[in-house]
Structure formats: C-alpha cells, structure tokens
Length: 355
Image (cartoon, helix red, strand yellow):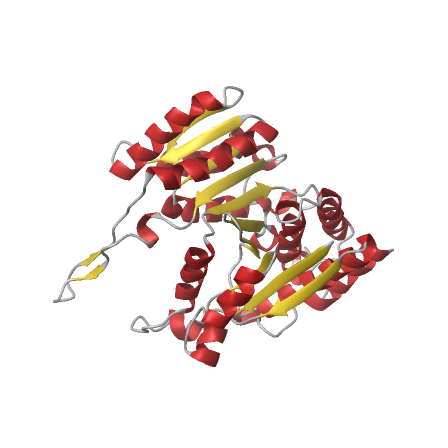
C-alpha cells in the first residue's frame, strides 16, 4: 500500500518521540511491503519561532494532503509563563483541529498487566480497565463566540455553543464503537445546569433507538469524574463535549500508571491525526529520556483507523507489550530496573518487528 504520512513533531520531546514512531512505522512498512513517504512540517512554538505563526499555511497544506498525520506535542515555557503573549503554541493546535475538521478525539484508556502496579488506584479497581472516550473537538467553549474581556479588563467571558449536527456526528461514532465493543455507551453532560448539555442529552436520546443493541446511560460530568476513580471498569464507550472531554480524558489517563503510555486519534471526514496524550515535557527535551511508547501506540492506531490495517496495528501493540514485559523501557517506568534511552527503545521495537 502507498502511504503519505505528515510528521508534525512540534515542541519539547515531540521530535524525539516522533523519531521513534517513524522507526517503527518504517519497520512495519518493510515487514508488510508498504511504500511509506514522510513529509515533515513545523507547528506550535517551533512554528512561531520559524514563521511567526503557530500553524502556518504551508504546514496545513502538508497535513491536509497526507493520508494521515503523526503529531508530537505542543507547548513551550517561554509562552506558558507569559500571560500577555499574543501568539501561543496552543492556538496552533486549535487552528489545526478546526482547519482539518478533526471533530472527534478518540482516547482509549487501558492497563498493561506488567505495569498495573504503577497505577495510583488499587489493583481490583484498575486491572482489566478498557474504556474509550469520544470527545467532540471543534465545538463548545474553546471555539464559541463572543469571547474576551470588557474594556476595563475586569471581566472575561467565553461562550459555549453546540449545534445538533455537531452532536449527532460525534454520537454516531460513539454508538458504532459501542456496537463493536461491550455495547455500553455513556453520555456525559451537565444537563441539570447547562442548555448545551440538555441539547446533547436530547439528541443522544433521539439517536438511541437506531442502535437497539447498545445500552445507553446518561451521567453528569461530576459524577463521572468521581466514578472514574471509584470504579473505572463500569465504563466502556463515553461520549462528551469538548471541555468535559479535555478534563476527563486526562483524569482517565493516569489509571494505566503513566501518561506516557496512552495514544489518541483525532478524526475528521477526510483527515486523521494521531498523537500521544502527554504534553511537550520541555524539562526532558533533548535528553533522550522521554517515553516514546504512547507515540508508537498512536502509530498503531494510525494503521487501524487511517488504513484499516489491523494486523500491522496489532503487531505494534504486541511489541510494545513485549517491551514492557521484558523491561526494555525508559526511566519513568523502569521501576528500579535498567532504564533505556528513548532512541534505544525505538531501535529495539523496530528490531523486534523485523525479527
């Protein structure tokens, strides 16, 4: 198969972890006879430094033309620590999602048998957790207008806006995923307070009869935040709006024991982007110590969601599990054993695929 993959390494540890994912993707291409072309472009702080824009038009053209995008991370302390900065790396992330039409963020949360002891939760709570969030990505309070401050600078306002169309297209993805899993869908909202949440709940209730094999539950976001810690195995597929999803998926990510292990996908009608859920971790940038496994697993999601190549996807997941079982990992999860460099882990994964 011919594959055109855009690489957007971004900031901090982004370039280092993307490099390891590329090693693995190249190994898969060699193993299965795929012809893979990579095209790299700047985004985030790196793009601001180079062009003055966090998501330049040239980067968008490369991403839009690609079959899939592998994305690293965005963020830099020089912008984080300057509340008056007019241009920020994160603006590039929002603009990228908007211009590429990436309306659905798919974030799985699962545990690894060899690392379940590192979870902050008790073993009986987390062993066997396997859930996935479908977060609406291009609507809600992050994009609603008006937004800003009054002339005196004493008040600030953001507007939360959702259309039925935006809810339907995200909810259908959740229903279809639930049909392939445990046939349980949870709609997460705040319908007792917010008008947008009532529209979410009403819309999902209207769709539910089209999926009679799926059990639908409706929960307030605060209750889900609590139950994710109390009993995460109660959930399978969860659908929610942009802000709630942003918060809950970060909460869920620590269940596995490390944010450095969780992949994600952002999907649109014609564009698909894959990224680790961790940030740019600038303190580790350039030290060859960052955990690349979340980015490698994002590449596994890419083969599945972008190319429908499930055997290739599974092979990547299998070698990642093998690296965990055999302790070929970076210092954050070495647990007192030998800690390997970021680049060494990438080399090992690619070697395992080819042997």
